[in-house]
Length: 297
Image (cartoon, rainbow, N blue to C red):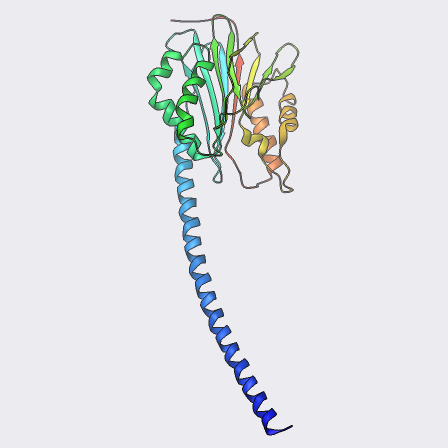
C-alpha cells in the first residue's frame, strides 16, 4: 500500500472519529433534552392528577348523603367516584307541594360538562324550583338553553329526571342518553328497560323532548344506574355490560329489600372488575313503592 493510500485512510479514520464524537455530543444533548421534557411531563401529570383528585372531592361533596324520608317510598343509593373520569351527580328532593318529589341522575363526559350542569342547576335554582312538580321535559329546555353556549366539542351529559305524584302514584320522567333505567313490576318481577329513550345532551342535540309516565303498584321499583356501571372493565378489557346488569337485578327476588338489590348490583360489578382501576364514576339509585297510604301533616 502506497504512502498516499495510507495517508488517505488515516484522514478517513480521523474524520470518522470526529463524526462519532459529534454524534455522541448530539446524543448527550438529546438525552438531556428528553430528560428535561420527561421531568416537565411528569410534573404536568402530577398537577393534572392533583386537579382531578380535587375536582373529584368537590364532586363527591355535592352528592347528597342524607336521603329525605318520603312517606310510602323507600330508597337505596350508592355513589362511587373514579380518580380517572368523573361526572356523576344525583339527588332526591321534595317539592314545595307535599304530593310530589323528584329523582335526578346525571352523568357527564367529564368535569367540564359536569361543572357546567351543576352551575346551571344552582344558578337557576329559583327558576327550576318553579318547574318542580311539573312535566320533567320543561327542565331540559332550561338545560339546553344554558348548557350549549358553554359546551366544548365532545362534551356530553346523560340524565334521568323523574317527578313522582304521590296522590296518583304516577311518575313522569325524561330519560336521555346512557342512563340505564329499569321499571320492575312487583307482581310478576318483570323488568322493563326505560332508558336511552332520547339522545344525550351534546352540541348537536336537536330533539323535541316529551315526558313519559308510569303508574305504580305497591312494591314496584325503579332502578337507575349511571354509565360507569355498564362500562366497568375486567382484566381482559371486557365491559360489565347491560346483560350482566339486568341479570344482577333478576338475581334478587322482589321480596328482597331495596338495599339487597343495590348491594347485589354493587357486588356483581366489583367482583367483575376484580380490583381494576375504576375508569368512570358510577351511581346506583333504587326506589320502591311501599304502600298507597299517604300520610301528610
